[in-house]
Image (cartoon, rainbow, N blue to C red; front, top):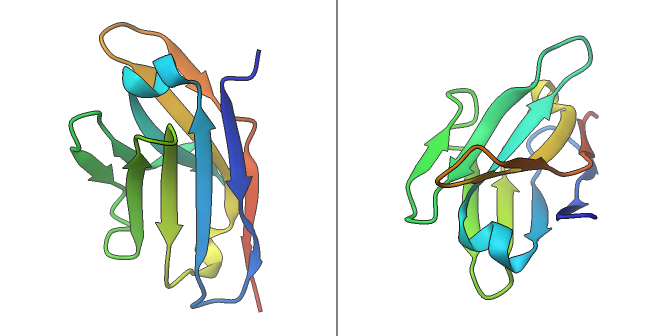
Length: 117
C-alpha cells in the first residue's frame, strides 16, 4: 500500500530551481513530521529538511537559504522548493513521514534530481 507519492524532480542547470512534492495519506500527514532526505551515489542518505505539524522546520546546513519546505494541509502534501541548485545537490530525493508520537516511519520511492550543465 503506497503511502507517500513523490513528484517533480528532473534535470536542471546549476543556479536553476526545482520543486518536489510528496502527497501523503490523510492520517499519515496529519500526525507526522514530514521531510525530505537525499542520497547521492556512494554516499549515505542524509537529511535535507523537515517540518513538524506545528510548523517547526529543520534544514541541512548545505541547503539553508536555498531550499524551503512547506506543508499544504488541504492537499496533504509537503513541498520542497529548491533554488540556486548546485551540482552537489544531485541525488535521489526521498520523502519521509515520521508519525508522532511513536516510531512508525514511511518512505517514498525516491525521485532523481540532477543538477548539470
